[in-house]
Image 1 (cartoon, helix red, strand yellow):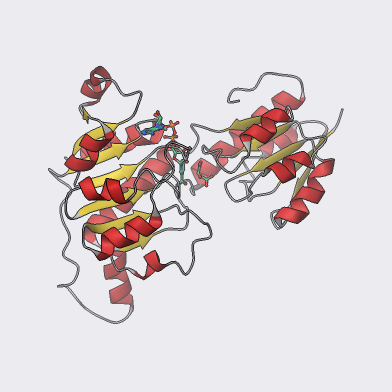
Image 2: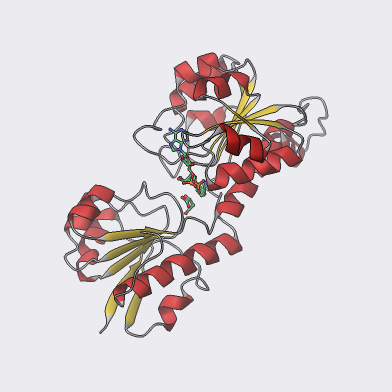
Length: 312
Ligand code: NAD
Ligand code: MLT
């Protein structure tokens, strides 16, 4: 038996070793397809492997009579039309654990860079200035970090923030008082977290319920001078409302790794000195990329050979 596998986003070559090693897998790596080209090309494939760049739309799924499995080398499956996949009997697998550590480390890096204005100071120094007055930051110690979404990444971020001597308060629909106590943090409603926090970090998936959850109303109940980190998904924060909240000085700074439209270039948020940003790099480490690609490659090989997958 042989299967055609298309990899349409850059994946770790070491990570796809399980696919390359398996018998009967014809692997094509093509990371340059436009959506229309992909909708045409996908006809011949049994499996599609993606990261976050490829949008696996209904159009693509409806043009894929042989497609049996979509592997998402990462956590969020918001770039895949799950309803269309289900209607067509296509299984979707992801890699929920492989990039947890990297995403948590990136969040802490962004939080620290935001508090101490490191990117702004670096840019100033690179441009030939020696300016020690414009980049006065704030300490993290004794500040309150509000964590919205205390799953794998949120919990890792909370543990690390405690190491920075921060007080942590979290909201997650599945967070119990008992679990919070065990973790040495507080729990609250989303409003309580938004009101109490000096820094807020978002770690929910992008869902109907979380789209624009951080909007003008949410900004209105936050502390004056709050700072926001989003290393989860664009679309959870309303970007226009964030822009207005920064311009009005309600929000003192924002560190963003993810955006409603990616690539995120030429956006008005990037013109604000209070905003620091990275181009969706939360999971971009050698370790995480290898790990997520190994996980989905294993699942794809197992499934195509008639076995049960771990992360449907
Ligand atoms: P997870 O599933 O372990 O945790 C998500 C948590 O969000 C869950 O505990 C869930 O109960 C909670 N949640 C759901 N709806 C909520 C709501 N309305 N309010 C508050 N909490 C809510 O996922 P994870 O591994 O922690 O990843 C979280 C998200 O981070 C992913 O969905 C993905 O979009 C994003 N992510 C981004 C990067 C990056 O490169 N920037 C890397 C990995 C993951
Ligand atoms: C994820 O959901 O895992 C992240 O978006 C990381 C990525 O694949 O870029």
